[in-house]
Length: 306
Image (cartoon, rainbow, N blue to C red; front, side, top):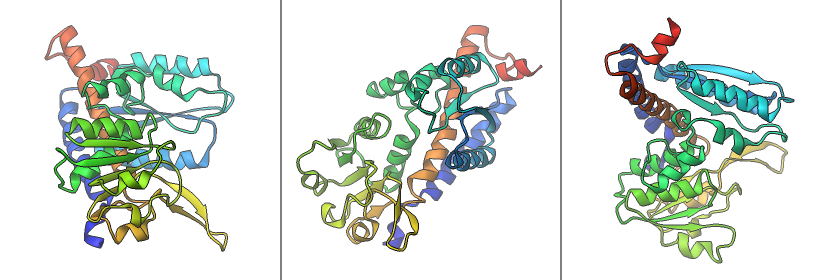
């Protein structure tokens, strides 16, 4: 099955190439993309994600800045900082790193980010826009997952798609994105009576439930595309910790036509989509600025820097 492994790197490289070209074009007009990362507390796993995002951003021609807050910061202090970033013309997009301390409501922070700067696609406005087929700022992981399905070459029109998992930021957005592309979608969750009855008839399966190796080869239709979004740390009998997805890769790979590895599948594409969303956000901001002040003027970011 090696030639049908749905590895994320080639898809991510294509997206990042497009992002860099667009970032250079926009920079020539005075509009430079800049991502602001918000971290709360000292979490080693978060540092790994931030370093990776910064590396990819530099590759894509997107400036990346980190803003770290202490673990005892209040909700109001964070929201005030976000409000300042919302009105700062030098900030294109805002990303809130997770996890956050228990006294902080991540949903409230996501709501505080202005939809124009919501490059994660987590603001309720951004989520709601998907229902109306406004898809250009969709949640990054959901958009990346559908991007991988498109990479298989399968025509999405009329495709039988099963989504296992119905979270607000992954499962549900995937369902809407797939429907927007013309797929027929079934969403399964913890109250679904027989998940395998649905999954065995699917041409494509998305799995995002946070349960290691939940989906096995006997639950998959031969030749189907399997997009595994889960990432789980498991400890083997020798006490060694390994990473695996929500799909039992070994048994599923014997049946599937395409399957994403974990790690190395959805993850790289998610970060690339974050950069693409940043460019989309910058274009929205430029269009609003042009509409208000007229075309041909220096970009807001350039003006603010002068």
